[in-house]
Length: 256
Image (cartoon, rainbow, N blue to C red):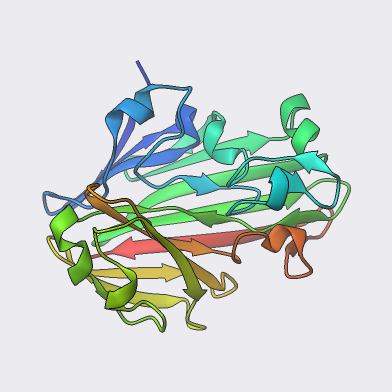
């Protein structure tokens, strides 16, 4: 049985599963389920979790040939962070902090020393997530993100609306799989009207310059995903660098 940590404050409740990539597996605001979760994938360690809020570290997206260009090593889509256990380093009634450190397995894919901390905390009306990345003796190349799955009835997907350029009704719906990205607002703020949830306020570090949108036909979710950059960014000169012996923090906030 997977250990699940429940966080509560006011009318907000969240669940976090450290052993499954520090994933936020549930979020409820005023009794409403905000996040979709396929429980079978959560409970099967051989599967990628479909649902919740997976953390995408050290990069978001898919690499050409699954090859990390700087070292020639293989890393699968969205990196390894979502598939690792993150031990709990501290927690309270409404927050939890989890950690991930380099080991032999990560170095085989990503030959760098690093320490990562993901903190999940309840805020009024929703949830705030922070990812702090600390480099070891060498500068650390990264392009992280998150992959939130929002609940929406399959038949209502085409009615989702957003205030982001490029997110238009002709690009979404339930008649096909869609998977596309747009440049994120420079403000790091976006709003989406999601049937059944109302207005979802999505905020994120302004250095995260990409929003990815994905869903599959017949599935009751839409993914609204803030990335540092589009797929392949970590293999380009647009990657971010964490200087040696320094830390950088990325964040995302979801409120209704």
